[in-house]
Image: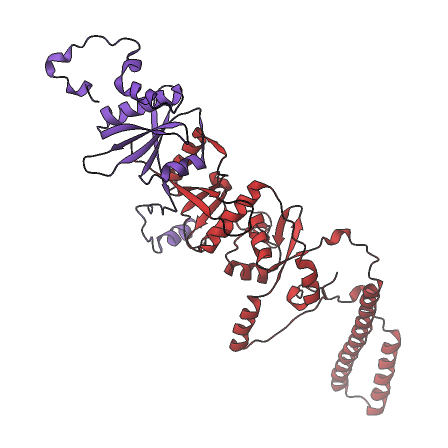
Length: 155
Length: 307
C-alpha cells in the first residue's frame, strides 16, 4: 500500500498529482468497496490512514468494515511486533453514541477515536473499558511548616 | 410540631459512647426539602451520613461569620442521588414542610407552653425576692456592726424593712428569663413519626435521573466517594476516599447508551480531564427498567500521547 515511500532518489521530481488523486488511490478505493460507511466517513478514514501509514509510520494499516455501525475502521500496529490497535475515524460534525464506542471496544484491541476536522487536522483520543486511575501529579513534596510560617509573616 | 422539645444532657462513659455510635449507625435521618433539593440541618446527622459516604455540600452561612463564603455552614445540601440512596437504605425520612401548618392545630401544646411560662415567672419572682432579702440582710448587718446601736431596736427595724420589701417588691415581666431550646430530639426518639415519614420520598421518573442514580449507586458500592462536578462540566467527581483527604480520580459524565454525543464535546471534556489530571469516565446504565441486575458500563478517556 505504501507505494509513495518506495520511490528512490531519482524520482524526486514527481509528475503533478491529478486533482482527484484521492479518488484514484488504491486504499481509498478499497475502503469505498467495503461498502459500509458514507463517503464523508470514508474520506475521513482515508485521511487517517495517510497519517498513520505515512506520517507516523505504522505497520500493516488496513481498513475493516463494521456493518453494525455502518462505519469503516482502521487496524494497524504502531511498531513491528506490537499488538494491533483499532482506530475509529469520524468527521467532526458527526455524533458518537456510547453504544458505538462499546461495540468497537468489544473487538478486544486498544481503541483510538480519531476526529477529522474540516481543515483535515486530526485529533486522536484513546478510549478503554473500565475505570483507569489517572497518573498522579508530579512534583508533589511535603512543604512542612513553610506554608504556615509564610502566612504568619504576612500578618 | 410533632417532635418534643427537650434539652438532652447525657454523660457518657467510653463504653456507652461506642454503643451510642452503633445505635447512631442505624438511626433514621430527617431530611427537609426546599423545593426539589434535600437539605440536612443537624450536625450529628451530617457526621453520621459521612460514614455512609454521603458528602453533600454546605450551603449556609456560619452564625458568627456570616459575611464570608470561604467557610460555609449548615444546611448540608444533598445531591438528589444521595438522598435517594439514603431513602433506599431506609435511613432517611422526609420532614414535612411546617410553614403550611395550621397555627391552631395544637391548642393544647400552646396552652401547655403558656402554663410553663407562668410557672417559670412565679418561680423566678420568688427567687428574685429571696435574693433581695439576702442582700438587704447583709447590708443591715454590716451597718449594725459599724454603728453598734441597741439590739432590740435594730431587730425590729430589720423586721420592718423586710416586710416593707416583701410588700413593695414586684418582679417585672420584662426581667423574666426565657429558655430557648437549641437542641432537639431527632427522629430516633419517635419511631411512629419515623415510620410515617419514611414512605414519602419523591422519586423523579425520567431516564436521565435514573441513569445518574444507577451510576451513583454502583460507584458508591465500589467504595468511592462522590460529589457534584459542576466545576468540571461533568456529573460527579469520584474520590478514592474522603474528599478532604484525596484528589478526585475521575470526572463522571452520565449518558444513555444511544444518546449521540457531539464529537467536539467529547474532545473538550477529554482535554479538560488531561489538564486537571483526572480521567473522564463515560458512564451508561446498560440495562432496561428493572431495579437491579443491570450493570453500569464505564469507558475511560485516556490521553493518547499522539501529538
